[in-house]
Length: 96
Image (cartoon, rainbow, N blue to C red):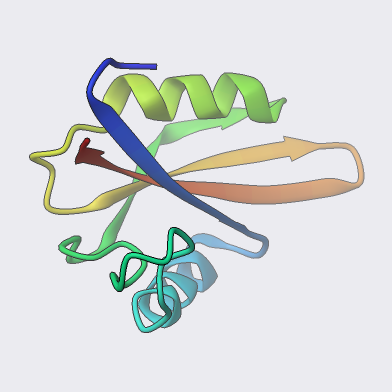
């Protein structure tokens, strides 16, 4: 994990259109940290990390952590798929 950066993360299933719709719903929910912020506050949308599909959540999370920056105006989503399970990890970075 990058020093001085905090990450917000959420997970959902479905296709990328569902991820985009879920992201808009999440933005209307309070953040989990109890500081009076909204989830993904300041992020205008979500973009797919890349066309790759990850076979495990750890690899997807690490790739997201490497690519997300606090200056980004959007969150990133990584697609994870293994037999019997498909999901998306959505992540945004913020200055600590």
